[in-house]
Structure formats: C-alpha cells, structure tokens
Image (cartoon, rainbow, N blue to C red; front, side, top):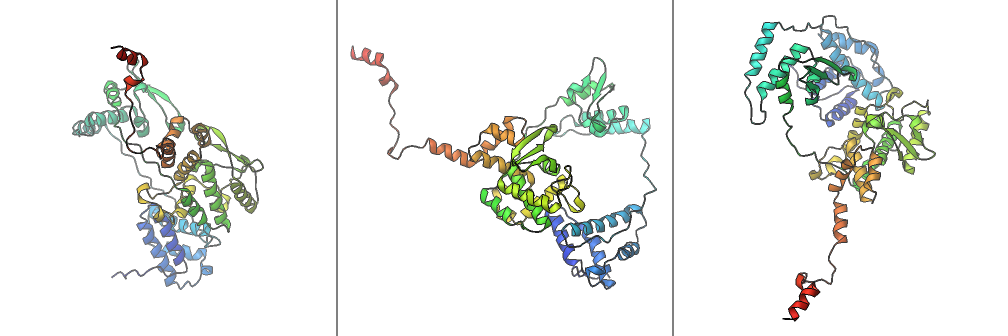
Length: 428
C-alpha cells in the first residue's frame, strides 16, 4: 500500500513548494511534475540528506538511475523536470549553482510516419464528405473534404492550407499560390480539380464577434504593484526596473526582451524600441526609470553594447515568456485587490494598456500616443478613448447645466425667431 503523502520534507522542500506555486500561478496544473518532485523529495529523505550543501551530482545521478524508466523519452522527461527545478532555484538565489550534470539520453527509435495509399486516402475523403453540417459550421463536409484533398494531392503543410485566401486561387491558370511557408517563403503549385469548391469555401465570411475587453490598472494599483517589488538584490532590482520600464514606455513584452544596451541613451533619457514589422521608435524615459536602469547596468558590469538590458541567470537575455512570468509573479499580490469587473489577470500587455489610458487621461493627443506605443493605425489608439471613464466625466462636466437653471429648460418656439413671419402676423 502506498503511504499517504504528508508534504515535502527534504532540504529542497521550501524551494519546491515555491516553484510549484509559481507554476500554478501561471495557470498550469503541474500535477505530473509535482508527482515527480515528490519522488525526488522522498529520495533525498531516504538518503538522509540534511542540508543543501550535501546535494551533489552523484546524488542526482543515483536518483535518476533508481527510477525504472527504460525509454529515453520518459527518462528525459524526468530529467527535464529536475533540471528546470534546479535552474529556477538558482535564478531565485535559493541555490548557488545547479548540481545536476546528467545529460539526456539519445532517442534512437524514431516513430515511422503513416503513409496513405490511394485506397486509404479515398476512404478518408469519403468519410469527410459524410460529416454532417452544424448550425454554426455550414459546409463542414465540403470543407474537410477539400482540406484533406489538398493535403494529400499537393503535400502542403497544415499551416499552409490554413493560410490560403481567395486571392491565392487562380482558376484561369489552375495555379495555387502557397504563402507563409517555412522561413516565410512563397511558392506556386498546381491546383487540384476541386479548387473551385475550395474558393467557394474560402469566400465564406467569418463570424462577427465582440472585441476582447481592454483591461488596465488605476494609478494607485500601479503604485501598489511597484511598491511590492523589493528594491534591493540582483533580481529585485531587475524586476523593479522592468516593471517601471514597461509602464513608462508601454513596450510590448518582446520589445523589452529584445532591448540591448546600445538602444539606451540615459544621458538624454531616451530609448529606441524595435516593434512590429521591424519598425523603430523612440520613447522618453522618466528620471526614475533612468535611475533604475543605470543601477541595473552598473550591477551587471555594463558589458558589451549588444548585451541584454534585462537578463536572467547566466547573463542570458530574458525571453518574452520570461518577461510575462516576471510580471505575473509580482502581480499575484495585486490581483485579489483588483475589482472583479475589470478582470484579474495582469500581464505585460495590461501594463501597455495602462500606459495608453493614463496618457489619454493626462490630456495627451491620440496621435502622440499612437507614436508612443507604435500603433500602425490611429483607429487602434482611439479604442482607449472608449474605455476611460475619466475622459467621459470631464466631457460631461464641460457641458453640465449651470446651477441657476432649475426645472425644465424653457424652449422658445421657432416661429418667434423669424422676423418676416412676425411682421406678416402683425399685418393681419
């Protein structure tokens, strides 16, 4: 009988609990990983490991050999769980270094692909043509039949078929233009016989849906978010500088991850950001942002000009997912305080929306905000005017009735303002 689990008890217990809480705060179930970490914790307790200093590469190698995992895929999955745990502990300064030195096993037996012969492909197409239509999915049978026929007849990738548009079909020349293939390449290919049917399916308009709600934070919530970040320590300084930078510039997560030392001009308090479509823009920086970035670069030693501004352990640049995790980790304390009506999930893009709304409430013109955020169209920026209630309240106060007006507004008849009509009436 398996003994009942009573909690982590090894020297890594506190770090494992924090690691699991961090992963689940990002919306992951993390059930399989927790079971594997329980095995590691029980192994360390059985081998009487009393302190973190007693962790050694040989100990982790013995743990991996003790598990009956003969398949390389299963062995590498367990190894990956342990490796990610130790890397996370090192990144959060709970370990000085990772004692894991085991390399993954090489997978020699590759899975053979299934090859369709003509008879099997015909049965698949016949089965697709019998799929019933639904109230929200008209022409479902024709759609699947056409997709499978193109996949089998032309050998296209699934993404290439999904990206086909009406303009890619040339019925006169019987040619199909395949766009956005691997490495962004386009090519021409012979169209199948049922290309006319494919064009009819592609011309079906998409269903209209409401735009997702734009969430943003109030100024006191931003102040609370920044106040919860520790101002000292290597990672505390980095996280505080990152959150302040995102709120200052309204940068996207990928733009912050791609930021390099050469993009900063702290003397003039400016930064150059590379946005969508490889477009560059310049944003001003607050004095507080300049101070935090200067401290961050000084702590990192101000390496080469191509060194990342926001780096993780090993001086490797933060990825877009890394920026997302930093924001989510510090936003966990703030999310219970956010009113339920505006949503509780705080991401880097919520900070971007917050920057736009606060600029608009401060009286900044929409065209300036568009250039600030790097929007391609002014219509995207105008969406923020629809959600900020303070701008609407200011407009309402501008046309508010004076206090002297009491009761209904008197209305003057239109004919009393017409001198010609009044003169004619008096002549009667």
